Image (cartoon, rainbow, N blue to C red; front, top):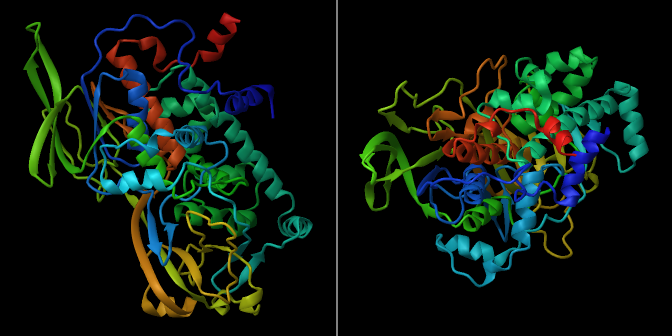
Length: 533
């Protein structure tokens, strides 16, 4: 690790990355602030956007957050029996500084316990029932399944695991960790840029600020091409890397190199989740931002020109929506779209814009089906002769195979680990989570489980279908004061990527509103820092 990287990671412990410290010098006198801002979508991206907008524009602006479904978006839980289980985004990397900041801030806040909030009752109950802490760790073991048998099964002994990997793949595994580490070192530069208030007008410029031309190149070639070029063997990619991309993104090593690196980072040690469910971060951010949640579906956005008090014409965005009370509309100075503008994900239309804004951008979202089964696993399905009472594997990853019907199979622990909780062996009924590209049939369930008493299926259009080259991502800026957060997903889809995009767009909207161009698309941070020393 170089000194530059150490200084970036030290921000986590010293608190210098805290969003309160924003500039290298005193801020210039600002003009009038916007009066109303709309955020469309209350997933992690939308609620983080509302949180950062409040920081940038202060207490005077009214922020409305539109959500037609559940707060949390693709972060959701399902109750089975006495416990709730994660069915959406499940894990957070230890170096995801924005997510860690959210949990630290919300976990230290006591006002949830005695303040009524302007959200539906169930979110008020969530605040009072759980505090915001990392979830307790439960030991786990990994195996890899090729559709017929287990080709790798993790041992309780580190030295045995090391020797197994060394025998089959040489030093590929160690080299992969070093390669991912080098990418993470560059990735973390974005926190320092955002600490000092820098923003970027496109996904490509954001990536370039992180990793220069190398990150842009990663976007335009496959993970397979990238890793082969780095000297990794095809066998290692097929046997070890692809199972990781299949469990994290349901796709092969032919996804783009950047999202592939994010996927491999998701196999790192120290991953964590939020006690009570990751979706709690969204409801907490919504409360902390003092936004108003409007439970409605946005149908269209139009440009409207109205006279101002000074007599000059002023433009606004008319957001049209349908809620429980029927159709309505409202005018806003700034609009942030935090839901994917792609087929099957959104049907928002745009009128009065020149050039026109499409309702759907090119590309499609990949389907992943999450099936939770409370039942008794048929361990022979995995081709093992081990007795179920001795089978302690908690996560089964799969290689690409014509006979493989699943992407992964995992023993699931509750989102809140009660005192004294111990995971049950496979000989007991427990909750298993199955990722598959298509819904499981009764016959397929019968082949995997000896019996079950409950099944829950959730179909997600979870993330883009990544097929490089990605020559051009959707824009962050759709119009003068109309922004699109989910453009970042076409680089990589992850909770932290949404949080980074949220911080970037809040800064971008602030700088463009106040004509502070010196903080947009500049990569001179380190030069300016050296100049101030």
